[in-house]
Amino acid sequence: MRLLLIEDDTKTANFVSRGLSEEGHVCDVLGNGQDGLFQMLREQYDVVIVDRMVPDLDGLSLVKALRSAGNRTPVLFLTAVGGIDDRVEGLEAGGDDYLVKPFAFAELLARVNALSRRPPATTERTSLQVADLSMDLIRRRVTRGGRILDLQPREFALLEVLMRADGRVLTRTMLLDRVWGINFDPGTSVVESHVSRLRAKIDKPFGTALLHTIRNTGYALHAPG
Image (tube, rainbow, N blue to C red; front, side):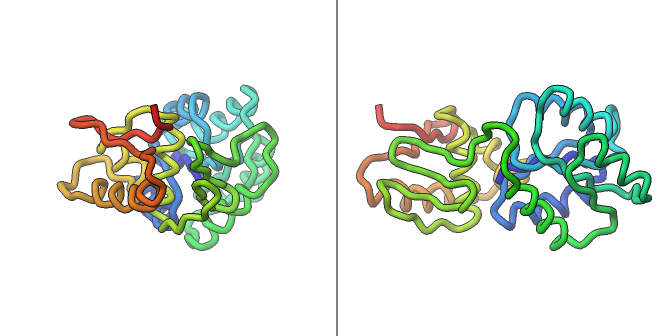
């Protein structure tokens, strides 16, 4: 899944994003509501996790603005504001679920998974396709030419990011941020090694390359030609 976390507490944001990434999900993180709203209106996510008390635009106002704009992406409020009236207010504002801090990550993950399984209110993508390479986002299954490919969670997340880019070139820095949640260069070859392993699974057995290295720039996934 592709998830958006809007949380201004760095410790909480790192804890949640790291856990979700380890489960194989792509998790973007923003620290204020205004940026979160802008991101939601231009990008597609499976679930959004938002703190009610983020700066610039609070979580309630953000969700109300989303719903007014016709955006029906499932929203989970993750907040320390936990009174009954607060929960009712959050749900009436357009939230789909409400989890109070402190929380267990296992419960957060279960709630996110439950929200992602709800039938989409709009025509959101449930699969991705590049040439004969297919990704089923619901069953989390990848096939090429009808053959099921065995991908590790991080390889699946990397492939999802590349497929969602629709052929655009993604730099090493962009992949570090979107797949590993690292917004600085750690000086490792983690991207290169994962790209190599992914290429060995999705390209090498089939003879036609879809995953391309763009010299001195990054990587792109697209059909031949």
